[in-house]
Length: 186
Image (cartoon, rainbow, N blue to C red; front, side):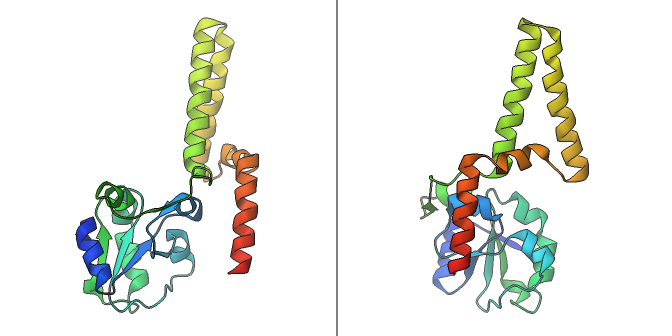
């Protein structure tokens, strides 16, 4: 898949190409490129049959890295749905699109993506354990060790207990309720 700059991508969309956001729903809820189609990588892997796109498709994620890493999957899923020579990657992703000064739809009332929330919580707990372990009592180093072990477990199994807990947080429950209601009305 050929990489396009944001300006090249915008020019192609003016000719009928479609921007396709491959990020998860919680990432898209906070910001996305107006008019883009939402087709998360998880649904491509599960369903495999995206809509037919005749004028070309420009795939994007936040930084462009995830899209590049999954280019083969995207190409395979799009086979027969779009001409092979009209599949593109937005170089630099949504971040580059914003840096180029192009329009982005934002809803800052939506919570940060769950993955970022996990990073913030885990980092805070590890730092807290290290500071308290050095300043108060060595037993507090156990907090850092426990969180580190949880992250290793999450990486090995795909189950993240911290993410499950954060999903139940009031700010995320509110979002999940809104998303479910919006999904039912569409």
